[in-house]
Image 1 (cartoon, rainbow, N blue to C red):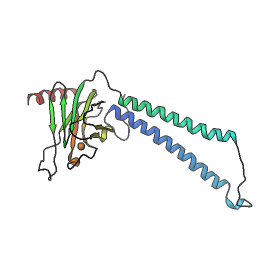
Image 2 (cartoon, rainbow, N blue to C red):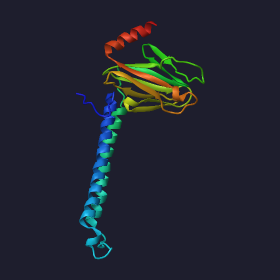
Image 3 (cartoon, rainbow, N blue to C red):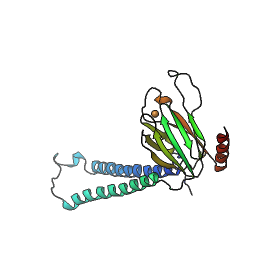
Image 4 (cartoon, helix red, strand yellow):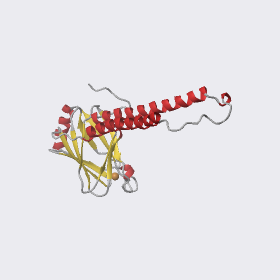
Length: 227
Ligand SMILES: [Cu+2]
């Protein structure tokens, strides 16, 4: 069962990342509350007026205490490392048998989505400087609850594939193919954009991810093929 997390995410991989974010933010908050609590306790318990001089009692070499304040944070870091590593390994894992494979090519300034077995979607939206073009952004259509592998590359400079609702960003590097899986678990349209400054029309290098049911996806594929 998928438990909807906050912030609202749209892929299984994003839920893993959101969950990891809560582990880190929660532990950070727990440490902060402990420190603030101890400061408050010390302020309330030993106010300045209760001491005869301004010098607090002097101690040195409390070994149990020193070992504890080294070992406890170290254990904390190890636990967080474990959770972070586990989340990252799960998000980076690539299914050897994905349901859909899309070759994504980023270029100045647009996107090309070539589905293995068809169709090919390509497009760019331009600023008025380059030339008036009010075409809608190209659409990456993905089936719900299925795994799509993206093979990402660039044909000119470094771009970056970013879909905020997927909590996911990956550089598109010329001459290299970077593969990752997307498993959408929420229907809808999600804005995507290039997240690496790549020149004049970088800000207009947008795309749309549309998550549809597998039946709608098959129907879209047939009509898009026939075009
Ligand atoms: Cu770009």
